[in-house]
Image 1 (spheres, rainbow, N blue to C red):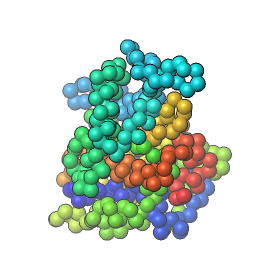
Image 2 (cartoon, rainbow, N blue to C red; image 1 turned 90 degrees about the vertical axis):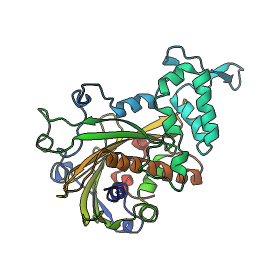
Image 3 (cartoon, helix red, strand yellow; image 1 turned 60 degrees about the horizontal axis):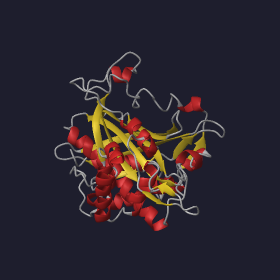
Length: 377
């Protein structure tokens, strides 16, 4: 089973168009009614979780990782009970200012130590010992988000769940059949669990889109079992002045472990803004070889107290159940870990070569026109 899943990652991340075919993939501004629901079936996309979805089989609560990371991305430390940040001299008037006013300030300190695991661990220890209120708030997530030396290693294996791989998981939520759910979800007789994980990417939107568009990189460094992959020759986007979206379709085939032969997949990917202005990438397949394969990536910008972009908290949701191929939760976690881990690893390498995260967040600079959402820069 594991030989199959990395190819699904490739299909998710080349939606911006591989380097060579990008010259022939054309965008076409399209009226929304020509796309929804004729070409994009929202009933097959992941729904937002309800309160019932966020309870496990033992009726214990399951957190919504997007909501949790949204709060953390803008967390102001002065609002935490007992917070007393270590002061540093302020410029000019000699007064003292907090060392970290918000999560983005602290994230910037970790960004400066990104490729120095010893320095990263020293800063984590300082937080734990000297900044108890901040540590109490962040200790569940922060260590796994900033420790990524295993991810950086040449022999990184996404099958391994390591606390230093830069990918933090929450427990899965479950899409439950309920009134108001689409006929697809009400009629699905398969595993309904949606796995959730997050990475802290020290890069800007251009870096993320650049690696997602780098087909050659995925072929050279990614799955070995890919037979072929080709985006459809045209993507569709919104007309000027209308709510932004961009829809691409991708076909691919790859080898499966013996005795399963090959797997062919037709994947639809939709970029859009949600009602809070956050950038989403949603995807699903209607291929007969899968009962369902559906996911969503949510990009949450992280800014320091001067509103400079530090990076993104990238939250991934993913679930699937393939027809006739044995898959399990380990396969699903491995798929999500590889998807998010490779995006983080490669985008940060591109950012390091460029030298800064200078661009603001996606909602203000990537969406001035629909074409900018997909075409490599």
